[in-house]
Length: 342
Image (cartoon, rainbow, N blue to C red; front, side):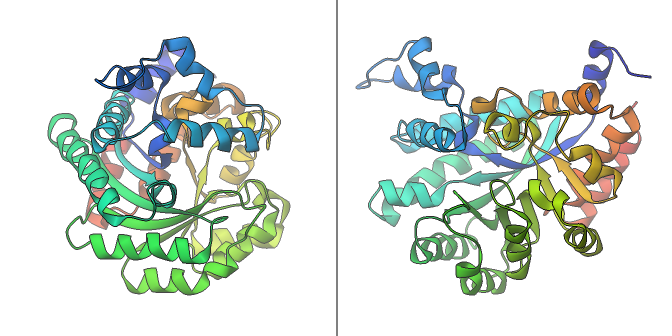
């Protein structure tokens, strides 16, 4: 029997959740752009002008919109403010842990590869993280994301910076490979993934979003521990068996896939089928400011569009911690909390 919206929404809000596939820049709401534009020396934006940055019709258009919003982040204080707003919104949804991508590759490209320009930006992000831990009880890890369709050398720069900075900032836990997989697969990055692994960084990868299951096989072959999107996995039975056997975390983003045109609807998304097969499925919002659906809403849509029961939503929340990069002791503590959530 389906709960009514208010009842199930209350349950989702109480349920401790982790979000594992979330891009910092993709959480910046138009209202936050307006706030940033009101600072001295800026050209103020109206809300309709800010909202115009978020208009797109397909995956390519989304990439261009994402870049346009990112270009408006000029100073470390802008990143700090955007991160704080993101963290407030996460906490309000009942998210207690997040592992957030930073588009370090994009930041480097637009700042002429100057490490002295990036490090103050990251220091601002860290100030927001520490504040959120203190004031909101939110734990957060950073994932340094490279752009696959730049160059291998650019990605190596990003991964090396993650390894260098991790000693000072232990919240840097992983590297990732985003961007347009139609333009470049994972194989060219094999050596630098191995270097990152030797530096004790965890390995994530966007694969199977706009490409077929061969892209996911390739991501696995270079050591990826979690796969973002993994939409096309459903088309390859042998791949599904491997993903299940290896316990690979799948960072699914249904509304994102609908909005970028790679899935026809939430109801048609393979979320339910992958979950029923027993894969390590997690639910995420990807870029909520662009796609109009945050994590709590994704859980609600799983209930209304794919008939996930309360117990199944509870299992999705459990999966989010099992697939996280948290220490085992913290995972166990949160799993117990989830089990006891009324």
